[in-house]
Image 1 (cartoon, rainbow, N blue to C red):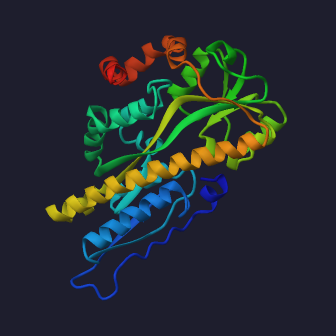
Image 2 (image 1 turned 180 degrees about the horizontal axis):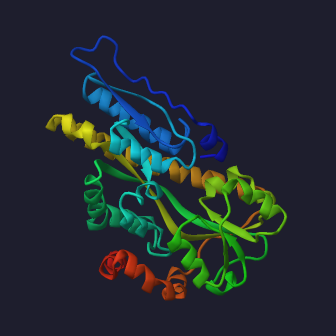
Image 3 (image 1 turned 120 degrees about the vertical axis):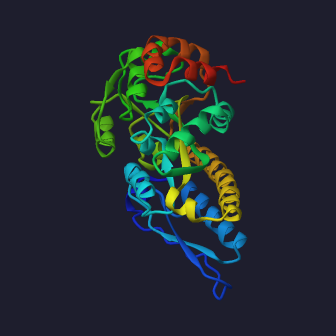
Length: 324
């Protein structure tokens, strides 16, 4: 998924209806914040194809994508019923349910399997239940993967290696608190200004998913990447309560099954994208620290967990960490 695609993908057209299908046809307005050929786009196409096929053409999809940073607007559109179905990132849902921000707690999840199990279990179900009060019906958690770190100074392999690094992070209180606990100097900066700051060395590094790092050509100014897996990046495939309430029990089952398939498509596509973009960065001279000690990093940010417990609940955090 490239930054250029994100910023240019203002229209996503789906025309998956079956001409001449029997019975009344309902058009589902769908949206997400990416390009049609991105993992999110592929996922939404899979959802729409399944719903159209399963309904024998009674449903078709049509809609618009959204520009980068429009996640909160997508959540609002679902709540208001101006969109029927949308992919919304966790960052876009925090404004509705602050507890969703738990996914941004650094080093909370050990790996993809752990994160997926947490969102498939009590945590994910609890968050979806809270969203229903805001007229958003969550169907399936999907993912873009994990965020990682690049820098121009040195190979980062241990928590101590972060000390003194001037690092741009996502505008996330948990994430910034975590990097401060590691001894980094945290900087807030609009994404479009990051490349210039890295090039001028007014910033030492930044953190993002690998696909975005490669698409933004950070490898030209950053020769060290560490696969820190410090923050999981989930997305929720959701339907507006206004749409859900009008659907029959059979159609609700169809939506849920289509969402489950779409989640598999999204995860597989995001994984391929990660590997492909990482390979490109390596070919461009980036040195990659592929594995770090998650327990060591988790312990290094322990001082910040007291505040995380106040925000998200000590029992909730402990339950996630206890998952095996």
